Image 1 (cartoon, rainbow, N blue to C red):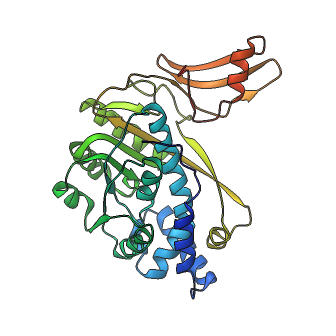
Image 2 (tube, rainbow, N blue to C red):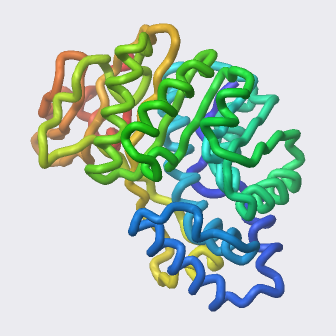
Length: 325
């Protein structure tokens, strides 16, 4: 059973995060969030998150945007596969449990949640937050590859903002192992940068060669038709809570998270809809849109004289699958 999940954090998760802010200096949390973000940008990874305050600061600053990207990717998968009803989830590099929350919102069928991560501070926070949500979960702490090798296969595996912390050989090894443990579908989400896109494309190519079928966002399993400096990515707008704004040191009430993703399945997907690759330009005479189609890249114009098609195209948004009807 699926539904279109909201890009904003669930009320229970927001409340749980804000409850943990009681007695914590907002300035200290903002300072720690800024320092952790700087470490991530410099390639330092989650080693900078060592304390309860670090974990909370990271969650306040990054969890909303990561959650929004995960939900957008999961919603796209659910749109393409409306009958997909996974019962088990493996969350690789789970951190504070962001992808688990997103998957639980997108797929109500999920019953079993297994999270893997090496960071103890993030694990403790995730368990606190998830227990508040009343979910029965298992969270194993240790090296993701070692834990994954011993883990049970799952219907749905998600690796969200994880492979960017690894070298090429490690990414290749993890991708093969994740696919081995995938009973049905693997979703990998990365930042919507040229480097994040390149990692997604490399993993996509590797796993298509291993027998995987692309479900989303691509309408085909062939090479990506985009050429540099262009790259495939999407954007999801989310509302910032007061705590989120404080953690980010921001005044703007919303954030636009750019992300890249791929969902691969064991069985081929029947529908091959085109994908909108940028926000369409809506004019009085036509709607112009850049689409990835089963036949490749296409810039299409939908004229106003075709009233029904024009009305439909006016509703297109960046990232939408189109041509399903």
